[in-house]
Length: 315
Image 1 (spheres, rainbow, N blue to C red):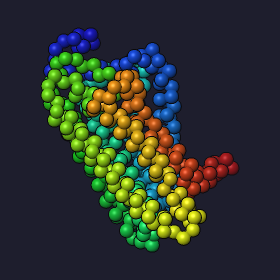
Image 2 (image 1 turned 90 degrees about the horizontal axis):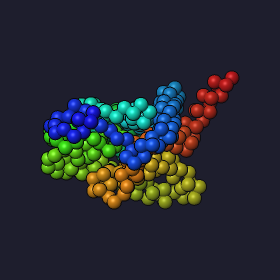
Image 3 (image 1 turned 30 degrees about the vertical axis):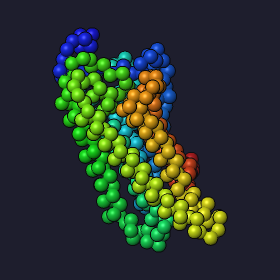
Image 4 (image 1 turned 45 degrees about the vertical axis):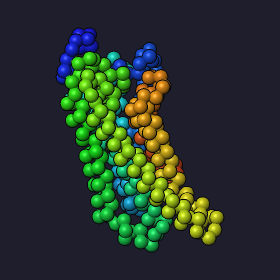
C-alpha cells in the first residue's frame, strides 16, 4: 500500500480512502451515530414502503412518490455507509478503482433522482391544491408512472458522464482520497491533467439538479400560496398549507446540506477539511433518515396506518 502512495502510475488499481482527515482517532466514536442513522434509515423507509403497500387508501400519487423517495434514500445511504463503516471499524481503506467509480455513479445519480422526486411531489401538491377536482384525472396512474420513469432516466443519464470522465484522466501523483467515500470532484482532483471538463460538467449537473429543480419547486409553491391566500377562512388556509409542510421540511433537509457540500467541494471554501468531509456525510445520511420520520409524524394517514399496524401487532 505504501508503494502505491508514492510510485507514479497512470491507472491505479485501488484508491485509499482516508476517512475523516484529522479525526482518525475518533473514527470509532463517529461510527456510532453513523450506524444509528443507517439503522433508522432502513427501518423508517421500509416501514413507509410496507404501510403504503398494505393500505389501499394510500394508493395515491403523493404516496407513490413517497415510495420512490424511500427507495432512493435506501439506495443512496446503502451505496456509501458500508464503505464508511468498513473504513472506521476494520481500517479497510482500499477501494478498487472500478468500485470507486461505481459508488461515485450511484451517489450522483440517486442524488439527482431524489431531487427529481421532490419536484414531482411539488407538482402533486400544486395539482391537489390548485386543481383539486381534476387531481385524479391529471395525475392518474399512467401519468405518475411516466413522471417516475422520467425522474429515474434523468438521474441515470445526468450522472453517466461522471465515471467516464474520471476514468479518462491519468492519476500519476497519488491515489489517496481524503474522504470517506468516492465522489466526483475529490476523485478527479487527484488527476495530473487539466480537469476543467470534469469541473464544468459537474457545475452544469449541479445547476441542472439543484438550480432548475429548486426553481420548479419555487414556481409550484408560488401558485400554491396564491391559491391558499384566496381561501375564505384562516382555518381553511392553515389546513391546506398543513398538507405541504412535510414536503417543505424534507426539501430543506435535502437541499441545504447538499448545496453547501457541493459548492464547498467545487470552489474550495476556506473551511477545515474534516468539517467539509463530515458535512459531505451528513447530506448523504441525515435526509434519508429524516424523510420517513417527517412524513410519519406530519402525515395523518401514515401516522394512523402505523398506529393501526402497531395495535394489531399488540393484540
